[in-house]
Amino acid sequence: AQSVTQLGSHVSVSEGALVLLRCNYSSSVPPYLFWYVQYPNQGLQLLLKYTTGATLVKGINGFEAEFKKSETSFHLTKPSAHMSDAAEYFCAVSAGNQGGKLIFGQGTELSVKP
Amino acid sequence: EPEVTQTPSHQVTQMGQEVILRCVPISNHLYFYWYRQILGQKVEFLVSFYNNEISEKSEIFDDQFSVERPDGSNFTLKIRSTKLEDSAMYFCASSAQRGGGNEQFFGPGTRLTVL
Image 1 (cartoon, rainbow over the protein chains, first blue to last red):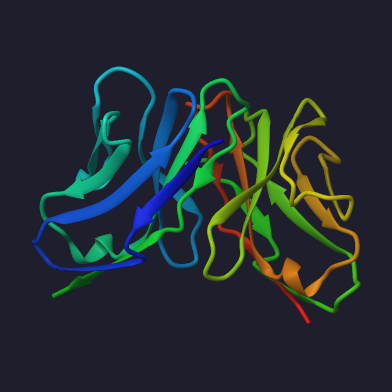
Image 2: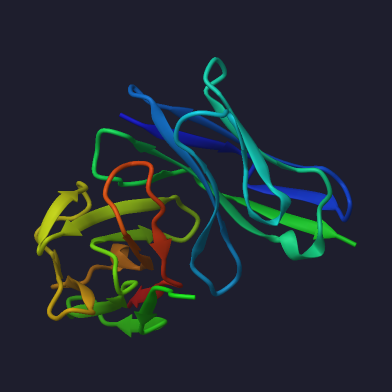
């Protein structure tokens, strides 16, 4: 069975500050890991994903995440927050040997203060 | 840029009524999914669909739920007799390929309110 835990349902940062959104996963098979972002009244948009290979993954809008197997983590970071980053962020895991269903964390709402 | 669309954006219904939520996946995609998110809870997988049949379904997807691809473009989720606990945001998604590492493209969702 797979599961995802996102620490912090709400994170607030100042514009220009580091963004760190935490995600830990549990998986009995090698996981595929995703971060999705949801802006108000829109669908979930893929930020980045890890499948195999390099453990530091770069995504859109300056975000990146590092897969750490030993810590079962896939934290999302961005060096400098922008007002437009305010949104809900979802971490998700999928098993490579299954049909692709995504198991989501509870989401973290990111607020950016001017 | 191709996108997944969903209609309606918001549906209000009475308990016990049937509802059909509609989705138009990206045109060259072959794999389709429904997820839902009850307010304040996680996004949950409901069902995946490929080649006109269900590939996988969750425990949530009981006999009250059904999916269909009635033509070459639409993908629908039907709830036969709605319950209060069916109130949620329902997301449709599609992907070009199957398998855990492939990106799923999500629609904006349909908010279902059961009274």
